[in-house]
Image (cartoon, rainbow, N blue to C red; front, side, top):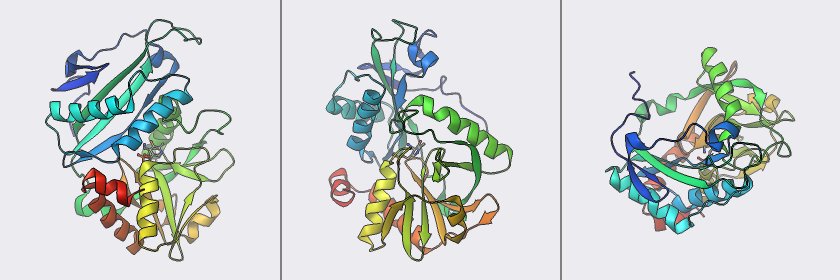
Length: 299
Ligand code: PMP
């Protein structure tokens, strides 16, 4: 597969309120966000022109910035409108949307009180990549890195810096022939994959680790409401790695991953089954509904 670099594409990027030609959306190398990871971002999907749970993503973006001690200088309404505008400017209907906010270059030191906060939003095509292959599932290696304790890092923030261990873990998994990594919490419980939450089916009910040191994903919460609507009991609790071998089904949930069955964790094998398949169907239907219908069903 040939890679099209992200700095060399056609289209527009929304940047602090203006539409900038894609290739001109350049940042100075002495930006605080680059050196000190004072940056937060979002990952959103548009289906048939509607951004799924847009306001939830916008609220999380604003909250992520606050957890890093800064206020994004745009309102939630303005950010929602900018996300929609960037879809239109690039003629996209099925797309991935990437807002990112960061501290600028006024100061380049640990103290950065005078830095300006910037916001950019890009979007690119993202068709459904899985198709009929989705039910085959993916394989997870158990990561050596653990999610930081919530007292060690602002783990409820979608902060750029928290992805450093994700990249390390994903690379190690790929090197060992797996697709992704399962990360544990700092005290050894199951946490999540590098870019998605995880669910297990035990005896007809769905169990998901309590999001104490990682994102309580928007997809995760959507899956929980879809499961409850199907009368599938959902239990959020601490899950040990030893328990995982008794799971009947395992899947990931995230904006990019949607619902992805897991067929192996280390040397344990799993067979994607009916709970996963039912929820994939329900999720696929939901994301294509009009936003007011989504709001009613995925409260
Ligand atoms: N955990 C991590 C580390 C992620 O990057 C994501 C994707 N944003 C998730 C969980 C799932 O979150 P969401 O469902 O809101 O995309």
